Image 1 (spheres, one colour):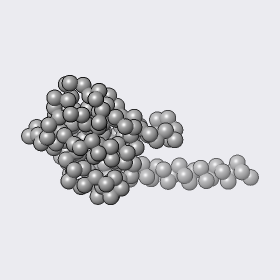
Image 2 (cartoon, one colour):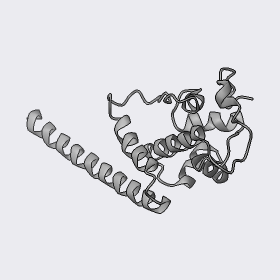
Image 3 (tube, helix red, strand yellow):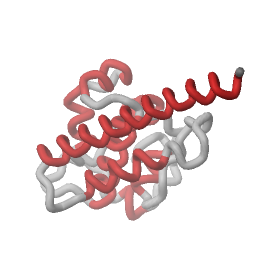
Image 4 (cartoon, helix red, strand yellow):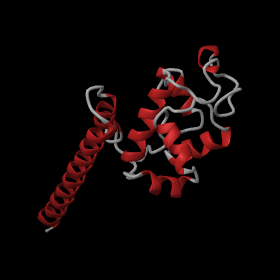
Length: 164
């Protein structure tokens, strides 16, 4: 059985696919961290907004984001990759220890990875509760939005200044 319809899933990862789990595996925990970080990076701070846009149920998304299960329908994986703007096969890549392939290449180099890196760092912090992580992520998003507003204002000012 494969996760996203690919037959190239490594045997090490494939043997872990099977359903509910008492203890999240490192592969699925890694996927969960990537999914949360990417969802937030794309502006979906809350799960319901993302589930509305993706067509994935809130329960299934919760299972993915908490590594509660280690088996999903290939259609669910395809919806997830599409909604997260990842190339097909990105979920399998993450499970195999690689990085996903983002399809938002219109962003300047480095811009897409910066918010994800900060959010991933928070999500991986073992010394924080889920509630603390949520508060920190919310603060980081607020800071990023304030920064984006300041940059937009600066761009407007520079356009006026150089535009005559």
